[in-house]
Each structure stands twice: as C-alpha cells, then as structure tokens.
Image (cartoon, rainbow, N blue to C red):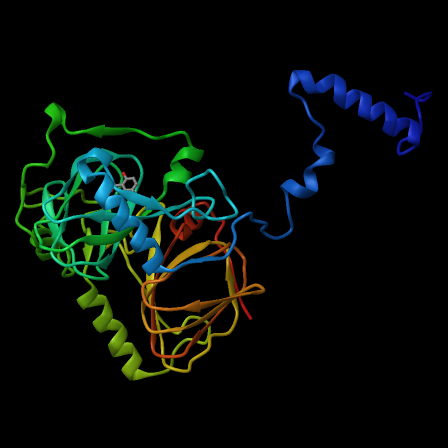
Length: 355
Ligand code: GTQ
C-alpha cells in the first residue's frame, strides 16, 4: 500500500492501536510489542532468593500434626512457596518443595503419580518410605527417590516425629499437562512387601546389577536405585576434604547419579552435595538451574545477586536461575541441593558461567 501513513508516524501508531483492539477478541496479538520480553538475551525470572528457617517451619508443621492426621491429609506437608510465585505452590518455576511430617504410628497411604519426587531427611530416625514395596529406612540427611510412576507409601514405626523435605517436579508436569495419579486398589494403605530393606542396594548399588534377563532383575532397569544414605555420601565428601584443593566455585562437590546410565538421579531432577572448608569463600557462579539448598551442617552466608542470607543448620534456601551465587563458610559448611538441571541438560538449555 503506497498511500497509507508512513510507518512509525503518529497516524500509523494510532491505526495500529485500532488494529490491536479489533484483533483482541479473536485472540490475536502483535509479537513486535512483546518480542523483547519473550526472547531475552539472558534469563529473567520471577523467582526470588529466599530462606526458610527450619525451626519456624517445623513449629507450624508440628501444630498441623495436632490437627490433621497423615492419613486424612494423604500427605501432611507444608509447601515452601517462592514469594515471587504466589499461588503456584512452586519453589522455582519448574520445581516444588515441601516439608512432610509423619508422627509415630502413622502411615501416608500408598500412591503413584507421574511426578518425580525426592525426599531429603531433615529429622527423625527409623521411619520409612517404601518404594514399590521395599522399605528405605530413613536416617537424617539420607536422599530417597520415588521416580515417576513408582508406588510409594510412608510410615513411621519409630517413637519420634519424622520430617523430610519433599522435592518434586510438580510445576514441570503441570506445564506439560501430563499429571496422572492413582491409589492402590480397594483402599489399601501400604504396598505389600516385595523385598527386605537393603535388597535394591545390594543388587544395584555396588557397581553391580542382576544378570540381564533373570528374575533377579527385579527393579526398573532404567532407574533401579532409590536410597542414597548420608553415611555414604558424607564419607565421600570427608575423603575429598582431607585431600584438599576445593573447586573455586563449588568447594568439594559430588552429584548423585543413576547407576543405570551415569546421568542425573531422575529425568527432571538433579541432586548434589557440597562441602566448603571452614573460612572458604567461593567465587561467583551462575547457572540456569534455579536450585533449592538445604544446610546440612555448619554456618555461613550466601550472597545471591544483591541479597545476603545467613545460613544455619537445616535452613532451606532457593537461588534463582542465573543469579550470581557466592557462598562463604564460617564453619565447615555442608549443603544438599536439587534443581531441574537434569531436564535442562536433555533440552540443550543448561548453561553456567564462572567468574
Ligand atoms: O509424598 O507422594 O510433598 O505426592 C507432594 C505430593 C509429597 C508424596 C508432596 C506428593 C507427595
């Protein structure tokens, strides 16, 4: 059209606004008004750095324990919701975090779902998560997995409350609209016992696996292992710490792996631990996987962008995607962390920078 208004003129702008108004009822919108916000040169995120003091959350959780049973609740959990994502039950854009309580004698009924879950034990000793009918006896700071569609129930035969952190990919599964869930038939609470505790660790956890094609191969081959005890991962960190030479950006760091393929523990979630010697300060590092951390031992500070968080044992904090993280250990500091790096690596998205 040669006789229209000159592009960029006031008249053209007025006509464009009219065009937008006419299109809107047909759910059509101009990309050029939003392109820069959609395709950003570096990550932008509504996720905010935040820290939950364990003792405060624990007090609320125990009050809930007086008011609703694990069975009534199905899962008695306080959701750790990111202040930048209100109403979403999300701790980062892709992940969920919650603190779950099981009191002595209680059971959380068996179910399975397409969401992947990890449990990181915060307190208590001797309760269990049963995965496909095999109990993982939970000790402080153990990591336990319930990969998608594996049956799981929780129970507490110990004499003390048991609290753990639940890390799930609930927002990821919601994003794909791919949630399925079911309970055991006939109202059954617990999965029938299929193997004694420790059976999977013996068959799959020692750089061994049952001979292929035999009945001994009782676990799903692509993701057999589900218990990563504190006693084992902590000893590995201790050996590294004695050897010295921490990485400038991470300290002494170990990733949990799936022995079937050497990759991350679950398709959507990666998990790791790190140890910073007393007085050690990391250099700044950014990565695209927003990460949820648990302070296992020690104290120090986390500087996240402009924010500074004081870290104490059992506190839980979250670092947004692409925020520069610097950690400083006042005393020897041990952290557990989980993120969506597993999914991002598969999608070709994961990046980091080390300053
Ligand atoms: O234990 O299966 O925190 O299904 C949220 C959803 C825990 C669980 C949560 C769940 C579970």
